Length: 354
Ligand SMILES: NC(=O)C1=CN([C@@H]2O[C@H](COP(=O)(O)OP(=O)(O)OC[C@H]3O[C@@H](n4cnc5c(N)ncnc54)[C@H](O)[C@@H]3O)[C@@H](O)[C@H]2O)C=CC1
Ligand SMILES: O=C(O)C(=O)Cc1ccc(O)cc1
Image (cartoon, rainbow, N blue to C red; front, side, top):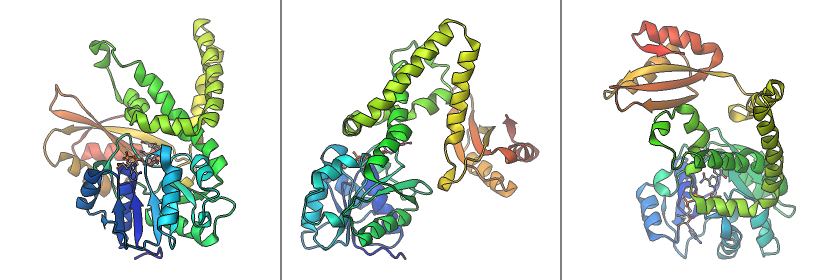
């Protein structure tokens, strides 16, 4: 049970909307769903995310999860259609939708928000109730927002398992330009060098290139809209990266080891600056690689053994070599526990590598 008052209406039953709906359902809330696409609505309903919204319904909270471009209009419509409800949106940019609704009646019931979780996939079939677990969820009140509206949206973030972080809309947009939009563009540029590359080169793709490029598989239309809505902040950072790239080219071309060392060390400092789960300091992690036979139940046995050994798995990657009857599984664990895990897995008969 939760102290968030329902029913909760979700407008837009794609990846984000259906994930919010499933998380609210898991907390026992009534959830009402709406989407322009009858197919997405049917799929989300079939997944148990809620039932279709009817004209006579009176939601207490409306979550707008439509694509970025017309979010402001969708929020304005929700404020007018549901005069008893608090309204939020989960869009990736916050100042642009606020500009559209700032003079709309009932805007004091609106507080923007942005879960910092998602994936490169879209649509309801990619949704998960666990999508937001332990992730930051920005709550971005504007000057006229009612305190009870801010409280309701903060509770929504908690109901979804996320960690609310309150900041103003403009500051939010600067923050995500750095932590989300620039990383996305870096992934796109690197992935762009792979398109059309010789297959003999691509055959050497390991985990590094997959890590760096994963988000480049995202919906280009959604990203055009996100970047268009936050172009000033993104342009500022692209200008800085342009200077860095010029310095990097000069260092590589001139064989300048010191300059190259500085650039690489700054990268180390940047990764160390990313906070750990729940906003705490980052905990150094290390990888233990395990060869897992390609049989049903083997991964479950590996995870079970790691659990018995008492080591928490922070992340996992599986690299499957089609030519061999084993998969290489990378277990990312707290660095201080990696040696213990490796030895304990070896003693249980697993083949491990560091
Ligand atoms: N994809 C991601 O990883 C993240 C996305 N966001 C934001 O969440 C929002 C939704 O993104 P996704 O769920 O990924 O997109 P999606 O494409 O999976 O879902 C969008 C849904 O909205 C529906 N829709 C479009 N216009 C509508 C309208 N006027 N009324 C009702 N339904 C409408 C579409 O049919 C679709 O089902 C976007 O604004 C995006 O910026 C935020 C965090 C992460
Ligand atoms: O897939 C990932 O790791 C993401 O970071 C997805 C994502 C996309 C857009 C957002 O506004 C927030 C998160």
